[in-house]
Image (cartoon, rainbow over all chains, first blue to last red; front, side):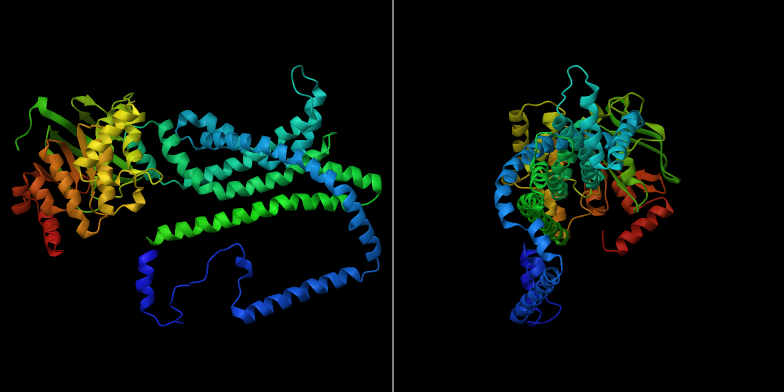
Length: 299
Length: 254
């Protein structure tokens, strides 16, 4: 994309529509990209008008004073947010425990599913049944069933902490989704790469380990990160089965104690503080990946 | 140029058949490659040249017929394909280097994992070959930083690092810009001079004429005509061979 562009550009006068688009294609604020000063003014004014109308509609409703008291109480927020933020550390912990296991288990499932040949038929079937099963059940149900169910069984030597089983549920459910992401990556590696590896005398496992998987994983990092964000959010599902509160459970306790919904908004804010930067980073990575692929395509 | 004796046969292909679905690509190919011979396969696209090479490397399973390498039937059931492939190198039209590895890693991967060489041994082997083919300064580059000619030379080095007895070259210059073809052909000429047994599918007729011990014209899945290059290129017996060579001359490729 480098030197060729210069020569290409020289053929046209400035403003020629055939000129390559020089605007940054995807920066963090790409959605706000506008044309010139006039564009900025229009964007600012229309944003103010839209938000203004929205706020005005909400505030002028008859029940606004009550709603403000129940949902947007500054005092309640001040009282409850620190504790919720502190309990949020538990959500982060659940996430940090679950994510590495998910990444490993999902890769294993994806590899099982990509094995070719009649010998591996049972393994492929197992992997397919697993992904179909756990992608077919709402995650919250898996959390309920394992979180309440397994401790109830009282099996000797089996942990009885509902939080443990809720994390297991997240791992099982997310591994099914993430394995599909890996599989897309594995499928995207051209068969000629496998042919090259095998033709050198590398076995099936070595070809997978050193040639296919590294290329596959590199390509699916952005969608994997998307699932990271989703998992961070879904740690809130653990609130349904645990006695020791995390952020959402804490917010519910405080809501019930004070007859005020503000703690729920405080919890929502806590999640946003973590997930929004993550999401922006993922978008940026996806855009960068796309630019790279386009550059490769034109080379 | 004579039929090699039984002891010096590197590869013997007998009545080889291969179909892809309903499309029969090879319809009974017989071919004998003597030790240190260079056999050039010529013919139109789709005549089965690539498929034949891929069968010899066992990338494609054969439907019927046999392939013997140094007297061992490699198409027999229960043969360790990885062991066979280690002694038969193949280079592809589109290079197929591993894009996520440096040149050095591309070359040392198979010697280390398949031959179980130590890192130092594999490295020494890679460096020696890279120096021999004028690529020593590229060893830490990634493939996408190299020209097509350099990539193809690296692919040849990668195959040579396994120290194969036989090399299969599948139209290795077809994806290259014209000015890059010579550097790759020179590498192959050097290999031929060093006595490497090679089976080469090519569209470079001048090159085939220079280098081949024997030229085989593949047409519609069989070897229609074979002989020394002087004979094939100057007085081909078969009418289809004549027509093929005529079209090459008209295209200015010879």
